[in-house]
Image (cartoon, rainbow, N blue to C red; front, side):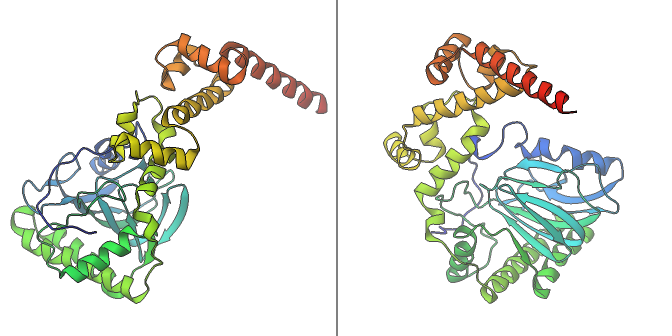
Length: 356
């Protein structure tokens, strides 16, 4: 359900719905900030928190950042894979752009719109941003997981029926890219015009109108060509499935059963039930298997790191614990696994050399 509208409240973002090391958006935006400081990209934005731009302070509750960049030439930066604090609506006003969403790459052209939900891992520019102009609004509706209750800001002046339809279009499908209708394109350009001419201090009302116009135009576009809706997209099982799919990106964290359950907003019993349903293993068994498989891969391929460093990187509390678990799983100690992998590599290289 979309839930009631209210002013923005703070919520801690689940750690597993972002890739460690590149998910904090303030850090992820540093390359854009630096390009703007060098004069390579024009950046105009109203923001709160640590997003770059003019501070909103208490204005436009729910807006994390609303702005545009104007890159007149191909750039040397991109936004690495990350998840957002809210739902992002963006319009490519000029040029081309490469967008990756949950491992799928989209090549965008001027006139395309993309929508990113908070649980969608995405990168903008792969690896670099093309010459283009992008207009966006990142709106926090107080949800992080597919099952969370959405809370729209009070300045969204819509009927409950309109809010429900928009919620269903956005929550019950994961389609990221659509072609803007003329009205939707004009609405995004209206946001850009307010940013160009106003400041947060004197332009809040105008931006509320522009934001409403953009979302209504988006609703009209979705009404005209409705995406297929999937009721299973907002289920508890989907939330747990997403968590488990991201868990390999956060293996170094000291996970306990209650931590994993809390990430999904569930009791330990319900989380364990869904984990077994999806993986045919208990949460502890599944986590152990992921850690050991990742460690085995690193032992084979990352010769620069010691076995102890790999053990800690994969979430094992001690090298002794890791060695015992590794031997139980693979039948040999970790260092023997590394020597065997090295021998196989040398044999393959020798065969290749003989073929030459």
